[in-house]
Amino acid sequence: MSDFNAQPLERLINNFQKLPGVGRKSATRMAYQILGMDKSEAEEFSNAILAVHNQIHRCPTCQNFTEKDVCKICSSEMRDKSVICIVESPRDVTTFEKTREYKGTYHVLHGLISPLDGIGVDQLTVKELLARLNDGSVKEVIMATNPTVEGEATAMYLSRIIKPLDIKVTRLAYGLPVGSSLEFADEVTLFRALKGRTEL
Amino acid sequence: MSDFNAQPLERLINNFQKLPGVGRKSATRMAYQILGMDKSEAEEFSNAILAVHNQIHRCPTCQNFTEKDVCKICSSEMRDKSVICIVESPRDVTTFEKTREYKGTYHVLHGLISPLDGIGVDQLTVKELLARLNDGSVKEVIMATNPTVEGEATAMYLSRIIKPLDIKVTRLAYGLPVGSSLEFADEVTLFRALKGRTEL
Image (cartoon, rainbow over all chains, first blue to last red; front, side, top):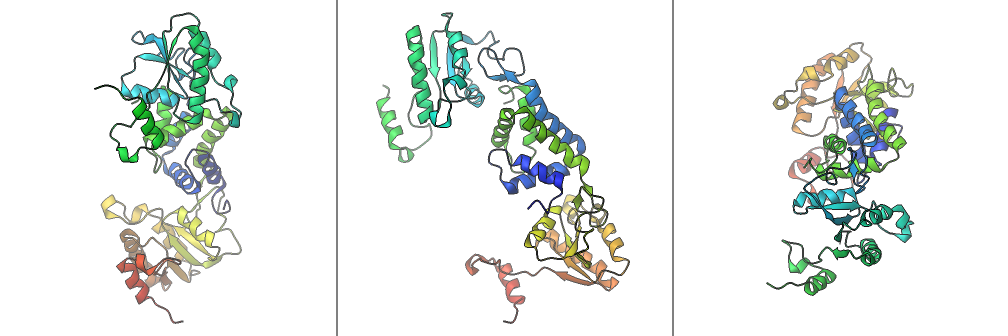
């Protein structure tokens, strides 16, 4: 197909196709959109891609992405440093922050244990997590990995290392999504909701 | 929402949201994908955006995008210069070329007449089209604008200017899409298919 488009356009289409959920047709539309932009707008886009790589690094404490020395959450006086919520990715931090309910800190694993994909503990930020737990200031660790096989396995593995340190380890509750209907709940979720029922 | 993401990430998300069909969630996923790329890969992406603006310009003849002085089609010995197919956008040229059936040349209008959007003849490449028709070598002009209100109006307008030049003006056939079912054809299409019926 590359015969029909100008070569620089083809190159940009190939780049757009690397993005999640973008096929050949969407990539082509996107490339034409870039071509139709003002030059300054395209330059801004191009620079924004570089900036993300040049300015963002991992927070030395929680391993979340940040452009500061220490991320906003870890450096905030308002956050409870005795609670750490363990998540798979920086996106999960954003999701939690949107609830505006959680006042503790985070630890981003940057992945989950997945032997099939060749991802073991060494590829995750477990070493950095254990270093944070060493000084005795942490009272609770909340496992907030996804409720998938890998998420569960990772949570299990970590809780087994952390519990001996005399730190409370908790897991997010399973149950019915708020606003959903019983009708659409799968059996496992329903079983978990029943098991985790609370008194009214 | 910008409180939760690092600022360079937020900037990139805003840029991705300018693309067609990309909302906040997709843009966020794309930005994280860029962040997860090797630096060299991100640089390639960034440069590809600039290249599209720096290397591509309009072909002086057909006004299609090209990185050459004159585009591949206009400079090809194999193409019939006496037939010009008039299309709205460079994408339409690609669509036609994929059929591998058309051997004439193109003229890209870069838009359609649309008074409501403030787009008149002066914003299109009509002047350049008329210049091509002046030397008498063109025998036929095919109107291949989309079968929409604006596409029809533009085709009508152009055919009225071109016909007095003693050049044959044709329009793409309307009818049932190949492989479709009568059941799904709208009335206007069916009426046009009936009107344009051919002998077997």
